[in-house]
Image (cartoon, rainbow, N blue to C red; front, top):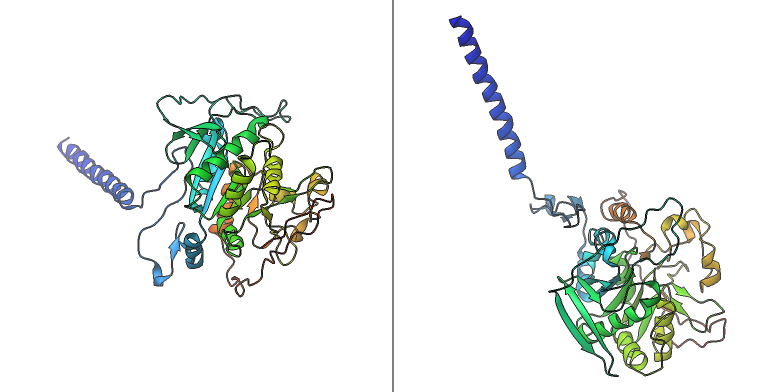
Length: 392
């Protein structure tokens, strides 16, 4: 009996020591790992290791071997403000994918939603689709500011942190023109002197910011400029850039759009219609130059649909009726330095971002310096007879 008791005590001690070793091992692993920063809404954006790089090769994005010296230099040289249209529900869903991927690569980004109104844009949902739940956000107590434009118009903004802002225009597709006008005038009043370019994107647009800056580098922000995927249906009286593919104004372009467009009574439509069309019409009336974003191989840089709609092709039918340039499918669809893609779900963005920034084909690197990759040629006279302003 005494011997059995001794054996039990011995086994108990051994078991205790084994448990202690396992617990301490787990504690050691977790206490010494690099913390994982994650988006408040719940998407893990990856571990950013702080240790010194191996063999002096820059390591970013989870120990990926990459030299981003040129990209970081352009980040300082070509300053881009990204304004992203979303909704209240989008702030807690779609914005997560953008914040976890491309938005931090802007010099500054802000999500703009409406303070009131219904979010439902479509009267009927696709078969099998689940409607987004309605989201209520208490805006009481948040910072409110009222702005007055040169022509006496006023609008109010409500800020939630530094990257979410609500506009007093009601939600809904028919209100996007008014909403965008107010945002552009806000940028004119508050941000114009701090940035070179102003990019508009939707909350399902994916942007490769490094390629965006390379495209814009060849243009002078002090020259009125307007770029994107050019739509030019013959039954419209003005060319314009697709809102979903994103469009960008230079600092001088924004200034001219607001001063000679928005602030001139009756010059531009203030409400209704399509936001991208009315912004484009107003830009043309104000004298903002359209610049081509086709590369030297006549491939598009901005894309108003998901990449799966182009490859293997053919492109969506609607593009054949609306696009200025004939749409292409397959490998000819898209520039090697493509800038944007539209209709991207959060999962698409995460996968796309991983393939672009965390995957590399060994032995294949950028050739030469891409000199003259964009011609920036003037856009020829439009088929519908509307003269295009000469690019400078």
